[in-house]
Image (tube, rainbow, N blue to C red; front, side, top):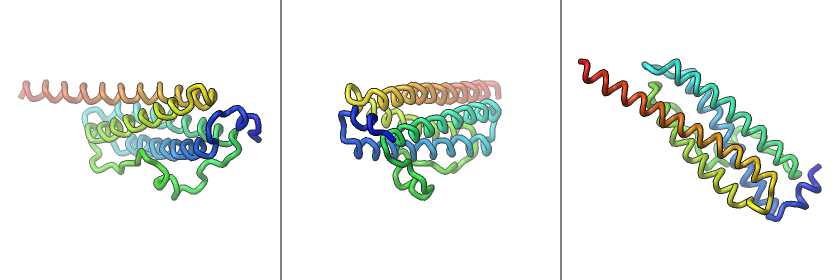
Length: 169
């Protein structure tokens, strides 16, 4: 599988597969970070953050699936050993150190910013050289940018609520 997929790519396919496997590992870690955060979140914004985190977890898992399919199309195998995920990932999983909404949203914002850099880089590498991988990376980049905006919105809402509360008491 993947003969034409490899032939039409104007890049070193082994380097591309390495980068895609790194991104794949990061998506699995992002999925888990959002999923576990949704389970643990506490505080005034618990319900909204939990819902948003579960939605993001679903999208991160979708990203992993897209990357796995592309890696397979290129004739390689996605990372199959979970121990390798943390080793390969440049955007690391951050264990929740505090379960309040503010801490978890801040952690996920940092992770989203790392992911944005990852997919911007893949887009730059693939532009004009690998249309299919570029298309996938562009799609994921768009969602990661939306995730960043949603995390920033939560932080603004939390800050506004705290300011209001402080004025009241």
